[in-house]
Image (tube, chains in turn yellow, blue):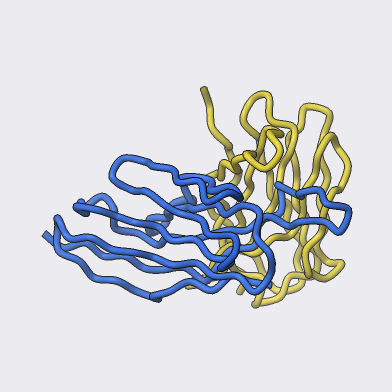
Amino acid sequence: DAGVTQSPTHLIKTRGQHVTLRCSPISGHKSVSWYQQVLGQGPQFIFQYYEKEERGRGNFPDRFSARQFPNYSSELNVNALLLGDSALYLCASSEYRGRRSEAFFGQGTRLTVV
Amino acid sequence: QQPVQSPQAVILREGEDAVINCSSSKALYSVHWYRQKHGEAPVFLMILLKGGEQKGHEKISASFNEKKQQSSLYLTASQLSYSGTYFCGTPHETSAGGTSYGKLTFGQGTILTVHP
């Protein structure tokens, strides 16, 4: 079975530009979460979507937005990019099992803002 | 609030043991453990649930003490493949008593290096 897939794997953008990152969850998983990981730190929660509805939002500015499609894939959008947005963006999918729910991560998109 | 991991880094020789701790200032109902190798995605290791449940994965086991609000990861007879950064993650527990399992708050990580 295919795992969580993300595209693109690497991206270089200029300050002020907009970026769209994509994620396809594991087949059958209806929950997708997005995380930002800055070098040397743990992943930081950005959004969770379940059944196409936003179920959680982390402490990120409104420049960050996301959505989930009927096939449960998801997009993360970041507007007006700042140098500080440079990071590894991870997508995780889950199948609901209550407190036993495991999150499976994709390989991430490495975003560099110059 | 972010769980606190200790130590920040561990250096081992193959075959040696290590313990990584994860502590939280808030009540814990479950703890997730992940390992991330350089340039790769975090890989799920195990979930520990309220009740002191112990789980195992290869030669890696863990314990969870909800009274102390902490979890420990035990790596025995370490192998070169164990090298990486280990993260503990705690799910967001809502005030209504539910669990937002899709939102994990991760510790800062423990870097484990195993030498031949």
